[in-house]
Length: 316
Image (cartoon, rainbow, N blue to C red; front, side, top):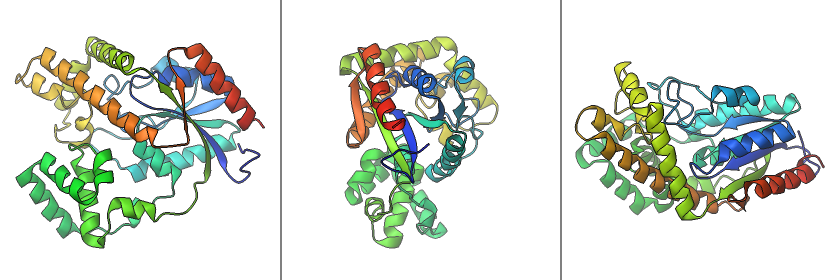
């Protein structure tokens, strides 16, 4: 679907923001009201058999509104931002051709950034020897120290990457070594316009309330069987060091299942890690001036405000 303001662009809506902020529930209401199809924008929900810890939409929710970009790969497979962007672009085009509106729902800022600009991650150079040397350096120094090295070279990229995201940390260092420019500088050089007309919204919670919601969600995940989900993944051959197992709720439970810490300790670690992750998400998204922040405590009023804004712009 196209807008009057941007006749060559596909309208893409977005309900984005911090984990546990209520994106899923709100997106279902918006999708039903406007005839949307939901595109999940979550770097963990792309994995099959990882349902509880990723807060994946339930079968009932998926039956209510069409969902896309879930369960794309096995947990043993790596998955890049570029692969997500390629898949999402195809789905966006298909949804628009059906006369429906694509609705992005999630909190992975890199995925939104990749869709916002025609970035070609694969177009940047790569050298197996350089990458191997950086991998050896990682094994010697550790993830935290490698992240510090990146922060000294490219603080903006380091700020959006968790130290445990060693694959992307090494990739950013590799690009700098090969080109003499940082990842941030390469992104700034990309001037091509986005093919989409974005309308983005985020739910704004008081900090204490968001933390309460996060803690409650973690408790509910544990009760729903998250330890058993992680145990089944490990027993099926998913290794602790794999990309999929670096997600919150998974990496903390591995030592508990190995008997090195208690489940109670792991639960507290998940809560702390999730609160810190939410803080990083908010810092990332508040830099995006396209996003309209609406109060989440009065959800009925917020839903009405979003619908009024969208009905005026989308159906113009």
